[in-house]
View (cartoon, rainbow, N blue to C red):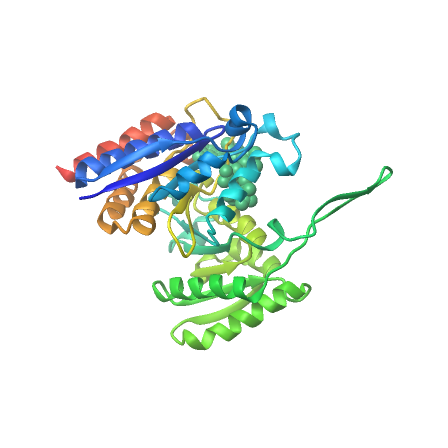
Length: 363
Ligand code: NAD
Ligand code: IPM
Ligand code: MN
């Protein structure tokens, strides 16, 4: 029994809808296990631009720093798309990740047995299940490299970004990925573009240097173009995938299609210090925002990761995962994972169903 402060950042679009359901699940876990989760909502992204003029107000970052863990919905939307990069909603999320030094983003892509039909892949390809963990480097690479920006003259505009890693950045994400593989099927695939990019050659060198320290893990290297293809051709070949910021962003959305919907994929962003950040991998889904159509399960599963990795509450995390597995097994579906003719639940009803299952499992 303990008291935890959780900083909640609903953000934009479907963000407030999905975080509300996730917060309800956290409250239910608190009731069930005798913990108190003190939750505060702070502005980020477009919502913060509207009220504070910046995507990550200092007070929001401070509130995050003072919490035990951070739960985020999503940021961004068409309303703010015309703003320059430095003050866009997405910049708030990037500054938060950087500000908390969260260099490792764990993105598990698991297919629920009852959702195999929802997969975009042929049934025989997902028949034996899919369980891939993408370990994405999150505070370096082309997202943050300098120099960057717009230059040139009228009539000949130019823009520039720089992909850069130093060996310390590669080594720390590599270690974390090897350790993750040790806890799983002991297969690590490092994804790069070492046939073209020097930064990838360094990445590969450092991964190879780490390998002898993890003799129980088999390390393989793959070029990112091939990896994108192999992921849909034969996802079962992958256990843990470690890759850079941009490649990990792209491959994890691709992995989501295998599991049926991006609305199912949670993530944990970890650093060497607390607090860590937990968020679905999807965005603010402006096309369905405010319509009670969003799938809250990615955010609810992110609460599971928050309990496990953020607070060290394994049993509580297992309870969340089991409740989500139960509602899926019961045939409850939001629109994104519903098959033809299946009844469709809204975001609120799906969240409530998970809370009900938690309660039912307890009784
Ligand atoms: P998106 O992930 O928001 O949406 C892509 C598609 O998936 C849409 O059709 C959407 O309706 C659907 N979708 C996403 N989440 C869903 C859910 N929970 N339930 C049901 N369907 C869901 O990606 P996008 O359209 O490329 O981006 C929209 C905005 O979100 C942009 O401003 C982008 O920058 C931002 N974004 C934010 C994050 C984040 O906050 N971590 C991540 C990705 C994109
Ligand atoms: C994600 C998003 C973010 C990213 C954007 C919104 C900055 O796509 O979390 O996957 O590119 O990291
Ligand atoms: Mn993304």
